[in-house]
Structure formats: C-alpha cells, structure tokens
Length: 455
Image 1 (cartoon, rainbow, N blue to C red):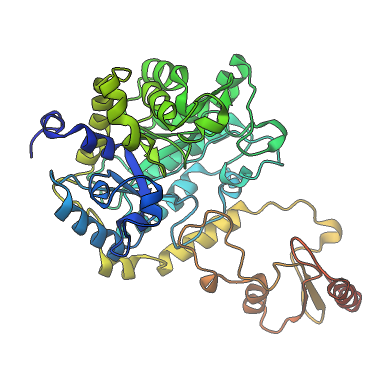
Image 2 (image 1 turned 90 degrees about the horizontal axis):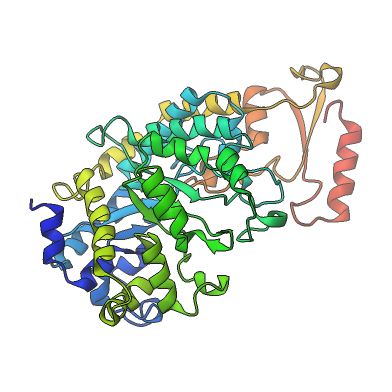
C-alpha cells in the first residue's frame, strides 16, 4: 500500500472534501436515488462514492454490503469508516452511563464496555461515539443520563476505563473500536438545562472542573474527539479555533481526528457566527473540524473557498491526512471489513456470558435511597405484593441510546419478580403513563395498593 501522503497527492480536491463528509447509511443504500434526500443535500450520486464515513449503520451484512459497493465505485479504493453511538451496550444492554457511575467500579465498567465493543465490532462498527464525559450538574438537562456524573475526578476514571475497553492496547487486538470522546467542551452546562443553549463558564471552572475528563480520555489514547453544540465565550465549539487548535492540538498535543456533532457545522448559521453555509464551512475547517457529520457544507463549498483564496488547501490536506491515518491504523486498507462477520455475530451478540455480566453490572449500579421498616430484603411469603408504575409491566426499560437493544428481549420488572419468586401474589397497576394518565388508572392503582401488604 502507498503511504497516506502519497495517496493524498493522487486525490482531487473534491475527493478530499468527500473524506471530510459523513452521512448516514441511507445514502449508501441501493435504493437511494438522486431525488429526495440526496438532491436536498445538493450533491450527486457520484459524490456518495467520495464520502469517507457512514453514520449509524450497523450489522455485519449491512456494513459488508455497503463497503463492497463503495470500494467498487471509489476511484482510489479508499474504504469507509462506520461510526455509531454504542453508549451503554450494543445489543446486550448495560445500565445507562449515569448508573454505571454508581458502581464506583471502573474495572467492572471496563469489562462491560469491552463487551459493547466486541458486539459492535463484529457487527461492523469501527468508531464508537463514546465516552460522553460531559460534567452534569443540572438535572433539567435532557442528556444527563449519558454521563457518569457530576464529579470530574470520577468522570475521568470512567473516561479512561471506556477508552481502554474500546481501544484495548492495540487495534491489532480482536474486536477493538476507535473511541470518540464527546462533547468537547462544556456541553453539560447549558443555561437553564436547555439543550443547545449557551454555556457560560469562567476559565478557572472550565479548566478545573469541565476539561479534566476529556483530557483523561485523550491521555488514555482516545483517537477521536467530537465537538459540542454549545458556545464557549460566545463561540460555537465547531468553529472555535482556540478550543480545537490552541487547547486540543497544541496544549494537549492531540493528533487524532475531530468530528462535528450531528449537523453542527450548519448550525453555525443559527448560532449567528456564520452568515450562510459557505461561511459555516470556512469557519469550521479553519477552526480544525476534520469531519462534518450529516451535512454537506464542506463538499458544497470547499472547492469554491479554495478557488477564491480564502481557504488554504493545506488545511484540507491536514484534515484528510488525519482521517486516512486513522483508517490505516485500523488496517482498513488491507481488510476493509475488519471484524464484521455474519456467523460470529450470531455466536457473540447477546450470548449468555454477556447477559450474565450485564446482570452483575446492573446489581452493582443499584442505589438504595431508603429502606424504612426494613422492607428489603423482601419477604413475600403469604403477602400480596403491589407493583405500581408505568414501567412495572413494560419492556421499555433499556434506557436512552441503547443502540441495537430490543424491547422484546428485555425482562420487565413484573417478569423478573415472577421468575425470582414463582409463588408470589403479584398485583400490577400502571397508575398513570409517563406524560399523561386517567382517573381510572389512578383509581385502580389506589384500590390495588389498599388490598396489598407491600407496594
């Protein structure tokens, strides 16, 4: 294989910009046509063959098929990177990261996330958008569950554990993934807990509390960083030269790849720092964003910006070199399918060993807030037990960002209690739904509660 630098010399400017663009798997499907979404992106079917990575497509058969078709069309035979959010398990689902933090056991969590990596890798994933190490202290924020908590030291310990679990000691090891730490930086501190909102942090607080977990992930060898949606000092992270070039690259000596979050480059326009997509592309590339996720401003405007002399092609070459070096590091030029394997997928995913570990981690993550009158451990002999709540008899309990987790494979609380205590006298009532409910449901729950010994 030729060197990455030699490969870049053979690439056209548009091919380079394609490597810097990521779209989801639909655009690579055989059914995708020039009309509809592709047309809305202002790109052609030929442009799809230039793209460098795929978002959110998993499964060995799907990833292998897409990679094969792509390599037939890509002029230089540059393989795709497949990236996905495997936040707390691929198909074997572990507790959400906030609960993983409650284990206080980085070694156990490392074992759990190594299972997530193994299942994802055999399904064709190359890059995992994890760990999410944003420090979270406002429960109103909707993404609190993705973080391991409110303490920067604890988050740093878990950041290292996640990275080690995914990347191992070397990518030559079986079933390893690239780890992408996110969201850089300060995403967990939006005003009023509103997602995408402004973040106002003093330099001291930013460095003392919010930055250490990201630094811990990078020190552990993390090879990718995702920018955050928020602003710091009024500048969105995706266009923040100080954050990406001065702090991340120069001060922290990070040599890996920087990817935007979903549509974050285009969002520089509503942020008010870019007049249009053209300026958004210019500012993001100059600031140090290597890959644009789920939008095509780089591809649509990069050539024009270089022709106009406002964007130095050397910056594009630097970004593409980082992307191609990562592909080379993973061995994709020699084996573009890496660990994707339809038969091993059947053997590995959701196997007994993985489920047993998931149960162990779940037990270690539990937090008992009160045990008034020593209700627990539960003595159910001869007692009527009331199980009340919208999730009591629900399979919808896997938690947010559960990747390929399937509700039909989950065990409800009702099923679990009946399995553990087959002679239990169990009475179930929803009481209400999460967002609404009826008087009848509440009345039924009250009636059942009155008739039972333990609720």
